[in-house]
Image 1 (cartoon, rainbow, N blue to C red):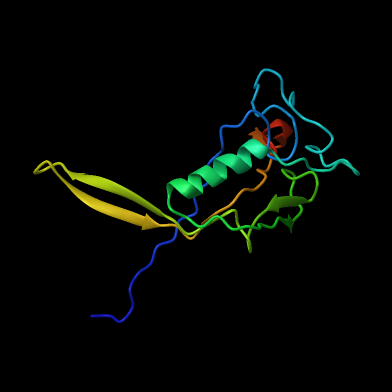
Image 2: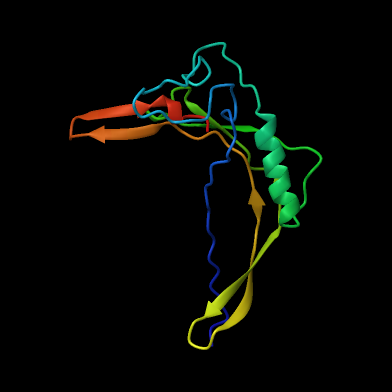
Length: 155
């Protein structure tokens, strides 16, 4: 038998159900009939536009952490991940890495054995959960045209 044990890591992205986006007061809703309806100078990366943190998103992240038995640190930190790509007008993404809002935790579940109708308990250990601004959505139209849906940015 091998001395190595396989370990599988997953990164799962979820969008919090908040009224406004993570770093501005624009409504957190997508209106396909009105492209880029819910945008502001911060969404589009305009010089001088400053972020305004969504307290509802922070509260929901902390509630998730408490629900999974995680540690909620007294302090957290935001980082700028700098990269150039059309879906990020400001040239950076606001994220958390070194000091996330949720550390650790455990999700417990049951898996049904359909052959005999029994259930087996399982669990997944969490390393972290953090908040970050989403990038805009790129929509390719044919082979030579691409729309950048800024309204999806910062969810």
